[in-house]
Structure formats: C-alpha cells, structure tokens
Length: 477
Image 1 (cartoon, rainbow, N blue to C red):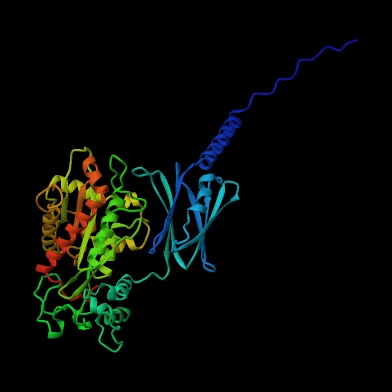
Image 2: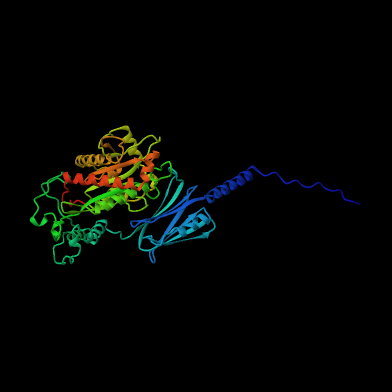
C-alpha cells in the first residue's frame, strides 16, 4: 500500500534580526569593494637636485603606510585597497638614470588588496608621504617627496660655479692665456666661501640701512676697470651680484595652458635659462653677476620656498617670470607687478595675485610639514623700502619689455603676491604675455621672441643696478 506523499516542509521565514544582519554584511562588503575599487589614473616621477617626487593619482583616496630603512636607504610604502595594475608597474620605467635621489622603484602585490612600493635611494633621505585632495585637473593624489638628508648649500654651489667658470668669462683675450692666479694671492670669492662655511658673511656698512640705495664708496686704484690687455686682479671683484630668477609653476603645476597646448611652466623656464646666460656673462662695476634659479628643471617649488631660497643665497634682486592667462582670448600684453602692503592697485591685479597664490594647491605641498610655520611667518614680513625698490626695478623692466612687445598696463601694478614677500630683496613678478591669447602664445613659443624677452629683462636689470648699486651683504641672512 502506497503511503500518502507528505507536502514538503516550507522553510521558515527569516527573522527581522537576520535580515538586518545580512544587510549589514552586504553593506560592509560593499564598502570594502569600494575601498578596493580605486583606479590608478596616472603615475609621475619628478626628479630634481633638491628633492624628487613620486605621484600616484587615483579616482579615490588612497591609504598608505610608510616604512623607511636607512641601510641601504629605501622607502617602503604599503598602499591599501588596491591591486597591482599596469599603471603602477609603469613607475619602474619612469625613473631616469640621472635622477639625483632615486636609484629605482619596485612594486608588487604584498597581500590581497595591498600593493607594496619600494623606492631605492641613492643617498640618505628625509621622506614625506602625504595625500592631496582633488584640485584643478587633478583627482586624488598620493605623494612621496624625497629630500636629501644632507642638501647642498646653494650659496656655496653658486660661488663654486662662478669660480669654476671665471677664467672662461674674462673679457680680455690676453687674460685667458695667462697662468692661473697663484693660490697665495688674495681671493675675495674664496673668502666668501670660507666665511659661509664658518657661518659668517660680510657685514653691511653700519651707516646704510639694508635696502637704501647708496653710492659706492671710493674704490682703490687696483679696482679700476680692466683695460684690454691688462691682467685682471682678484681685488677687482669684491663681491658677486646675485639675481634670483624664479620660473613660475613647474612639475605638478603646469601653470596656464594656451589654446595650442603650450604650458606656462615650459616657456618661462626657457626664458629664465636665456636670461641666466646673459647675467652670468655680465659684470657691473668690475663685480661679476650670477643668476640663481629657484627651479632649474621641471619640478614644483612651493611659493614660500622660492622666497626662502632667494634669501638663502643673499640675492640682490628677485625676478619671478610668468605668462598670463585670462578667461577670454582677447586679453594681451606684458605686465610687471610689485608687492602691495595694502590693497591691490586694480581689480585685475588682485585677481591675478589670488590666482598665482593658488599654485601651492595645484603643485601640492605637505600641509603637515613643520616648515609651514616658518614659511607663513616669512610671508607676513614686508617693508616699505623693499616695495619702493621693487617699483624702481619694475619700472625699468616694464620700459624695456615695452620695446619688444605690447604692454597690458603702462605702469607697474601692485598686489599681495606671496612670492614677492621677501622683506629684504627688491622683488617683481613679470607676466611676459597672455598665453591664453593665440597670437601671443605663438610669440611665446618662438625662440626669437624668447631671446628678445631675455635681452629686454637683462637691459632692465643693468639699468636698475646703474642707479641702485648693490650694497654689502647683510649678516641677517
């Protein structure tokens, strides 16, 4: 006899608590997937003598843990929430053999959802690892800045470079064939190196304020200008005249970009190099000139650091070089700006200062760095004498630039540019042209116009020093 078939038992409905528990599990898994789902957008390496930077850009914020090993020096960073991707592997090939700080980069999957990146270093370093939120054209960025533990003193390097090149820059043909000066003869440039190494520098004349232009003291007979065929003596060079050139933007910060893709950072660096060549080949009153670049390649330098670098080499002038941009292509012409202790001289000057002062946000600085307090204190310092001298410098530069191109404004404008706030150095910012204007973009790309700009700036600097001789260096630097 067949037994009746019993109906299948239905599974009991889940309780409300079980439903909530399952939902929580789904949410947790979803959050984990989101954390692990960050996509690497780009990787970049920016080598420079003063520091090298590695940047990892992603569409979501990354979490990283760093470990520094001193022997051999290397930085290990565990990046959580991602898996090894072709973009990350590209970092290995992006390190250049001549990178001053990075010997190589290795990447690998250290654990599920954790990528380990190891930066092998050429020397002991002080690493900074930090993140940047989206800004301008960038999304989230994870940044490794690798500073040498024993950085080169820029003033000593500048003077050593001058001493090395001095024989080649002697204007007299006869002088280039003579035997080198005996070591026992007085060498004031060598004295300056020794004084710098001992922590001392030549004192300022006690009767002259640091920034008031004064007539040079009567020179001894030995300091008379060199005549053709006469042997130049070391006493004819009692100091180096240093001009700090500041090519704007750089590295992560391209600056303004023209309609055809011309980047401001590239143009202004080229003009700065041309101007450097002219400065290094010039003497004023028997004193050799030397240019010092706040950046000598395609890397980012914070605004406050640019000011500090110029002060560290005891610069006599500071010239920041830029290429302007506006929201419409009609704007055109060059401009020169000086610092303002009060309000800006025009709405346009205020707008431009605000735009230029945002360079740190785009280029990316570590806001947790202890140096920020020092930088912010420095940027609050300014003097009336500095501004007055800056206006004199800006006026002669504007006049010379007007001979090679159109001027946007016929006078020097003023605004609160952060990069002009060295309290003891006459400082100007030159907007060479509007890179946003198609015609002026083409001119800025032209080697001939770049040469003309460098010539004009050189003439302006020479005219300024003719009326405002540089003073002895201050002990305060």
